[in-house]
Image (cartoon, rainbow, N blue to C red; front, side, top):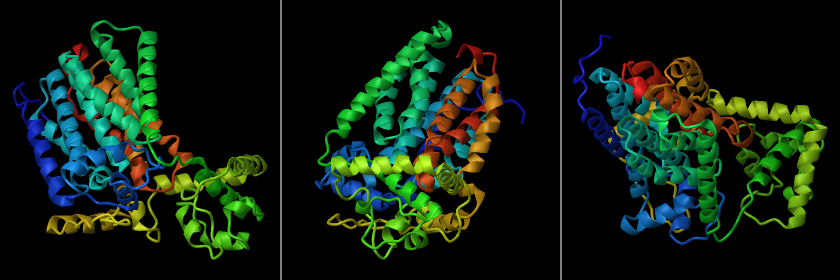
Length: 455
C-alpha cells in the first residue's frame, strides 16, 4: 500500500467510523442481550438483595441508569459509547503521531479491531466482561491522546474509566496494571523527560492501590458477602474424586447417597454447572447458601489435601479446563458458553423485548455458524498477539509501540490466571482477544513516521 499525503486521512474520519459502528451495534443488539447473570444484576439494581458474587459496580451503574430509562438499554449504550469513542481517540492519536497515515489504513485498523469476531459478538451483551473491555479501550484512547498531544487533561479523562474497569471485575487488576504504568509514565513527563523507572513503578503501584481500596469500598456496600473460592474448591474436589475413585468432597457439599459414579456422569471439565444441576442426589450450590466458619475451614483443608495427594489429577483437570476455555467449542456444548441470544427474565424483573430486526437475526445465524470454528475460539487471538510482539517492541519508542505493548501486556496478564479460575465461557477472554487484535493492527498498520519517536 503506497503512503498517503499528510492530509489523506482527515481528523474527523475516526469519529465518523465510530458513529457508524455505534449505530450498527444499536441496530443489531438493542436493548442489549441479557443472560441469567445480566438479569440477576438488574434485579439487584432494582432493589433485590445485593451480593458481591460479581462486583457491585455494575449494579450501582445500572441503578443510576434505570432511574433514567428502565431496562438494560442505557447501560448497553454507555458501554458502546466507551468502546467506539475509545477506538476513535486511539486512531486519532496515531494520526497525530504519524502524519502519513492514510484513510484506508485508518479504516482498516478500526474495522479490524471493532469487528473481529469475538469483540463483535460479545459487545451485544450487558456483561461485566463487556464493561471491562469497553472501559479499557477508552483508557487506551485517552492515554494515547495524552501521549500524542502532551495534554495531561486526557489523563484525568482516563481516570474514571480506569477505575470502572478495575472495579467491574474481581480479577481486573492484572489487566489494569499496564495502563496504570502507562498513565504514571505520562504523568511523569513521558518521552519528554524520561522519568526514572522506580518513580513510574511507585506511582503505578500507588494508583492501583487507590483503585483496589475504592473497589473494596464499593464491594462492601452489599447485603450479602459471598466467598468465591468454594466454587473452585468444589469443582477441583469433584474432578480429583472422579480420578481417584474416592469421594473427597465433604459431606455438607453433596446430597446424601451421592456416589463417585453418579458424580462422574454429571461432571464436565468445561463448566461446574452440569454437575450442580444433573446429579440425582444433588450438590450444594457454592453461591446460594452461606457457610459456617467450620465448613469453610473443612472445605479448604479438604481441597489442599486433595491437591497434595493427587497433583496429577488436579493438573489434568486444569489442563482440560484450559483446553476447553481457549480451544474450539464442541458442538455438543451449550451455545451459551459463547453467546446468549436472549433477554432472560429473573423473578419480578419487567419483561424485555428481544431485538426483532432482520439484521439481528442475520448476525445470530452467522454467529451460530462460527460457534464451532477457530474464529470464536481464544487461541488464534493469542497467537496473533504473540506474533505482534516483535513489531511492537521495535516501535516501543513511539506511540504505536507503547500502545501495542500496553495492550499485549494487559491481555496476557489478564488471561494467565483464567487458566485456573474460570469455566469455558468465551466472555472471560473478551478483553484479551480484543486487546491482542488491536495491538497487532496497531503494530502492523500504523505507518512509521519520523515524528513517532517524539510522541
